[in-house]
Length: 259
Image 1: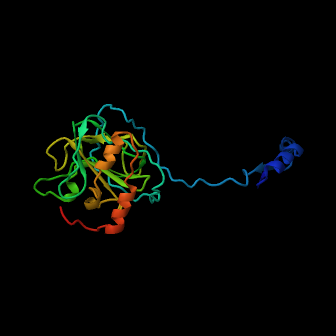
Image 2 (image 1 turned 45 degrees about the vertical axis):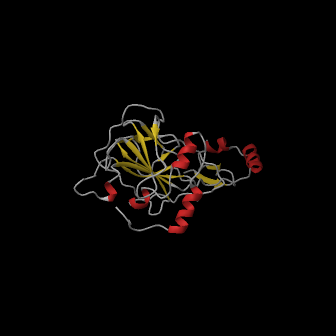
Image 3 (image 1 turned 180 degrees about the vertical axis):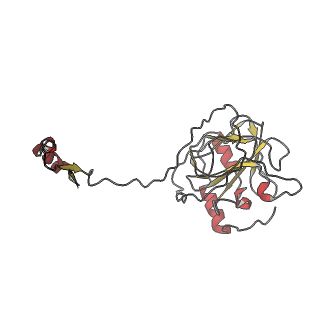
């Protein structure tokens, strides 16, 4: 039986060994053979960056995806990276096509982006999907707050901020909790599901807080319009500082204050 010896060698010593040792000769003898192999450079470091599989998505318009018959609810995912205000992140405008939005919202900060049903909705920055709901569970007779968004996608950006788009007509195939997306990847289509009377995208920006299920924070904590204005013009204005300040002042509410 051959014995395998695994030795960590520096580059210089490994070259000397390869010149002086006749490995092939040993393997042809009738007696037990000994093979000397390298274990890789001594300075090899393990890869520690977590990167879930990225779906094959396109930011350009294409056929409407077929929604899954069941909703997708997020499991726990690795902690988000610590936001770095000095780092420049890439952002894109969330809707491909003609849209308009106001600088106001009703009882909490958010933006209702009016647009035609079926227009593509994109990930505004790179990150990991926290939640994706493919079934409209809203019931007018029992209008629960968690169902008012209809079909939606929640994204934890690499900047540490959560981005939420709801009232979708469909969630893009392959978009589910734990999947990594890049800025510009299609995540769904504009619709009017949930508590909605017209085609539009409800867009919310918030800290991750409970990460999943906390719809009262997920729906919107700061006004998105200053950032939407920047991204539409090709800018990189980041909500990191404002979201961080909001969380420092208000913490993370554990229950809704309104429906």
